[in-house]
Image 1 (spheres, rainbow, N blue to C red):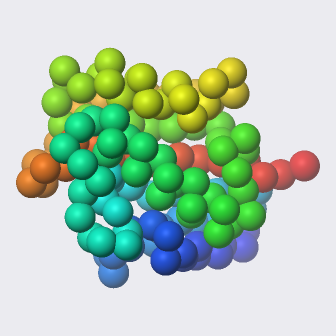
Image 2 (cartoon, rainbow, N blue to C red):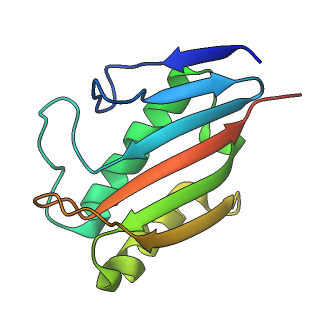
Amino acid sequence: MPRETIATPDAPSSPLYAQGVRAGPYVFVSGMTGTDPATGSLAGPSIQEQTRQALTSCEAVLRAAGATLDDVVEVGGLLTRSEDFAGFNEEYARWFGDRKPARYVARLGVELPGVLLSVRMTAYVGG
């Protein structure tokens, strides 16, 4: 199966992993934190601000691969603090509305200063 690495300046990047990979009819988006790619700083201290930025970054990677949020079939959310679940859901619901993909939410195992979450996605762009 052909494999294409996806890269965009509109999402945080690292030399350790691809922002996204397109393999056949699927686009896999790596876990994105609430880091603003323009500044390299967290988008804010709240779970809503960081969720908004993480989803914005995921959407940028999807766009670079020729996909949209409408193509997303699965989302994974990793939260640093369990008490942020309601705030995460609040912002998340604004993004997907009635187009609900499959989803899981679990606890983020690593602790990074100020980072409240990581969000990853899988999109299907086949016929």
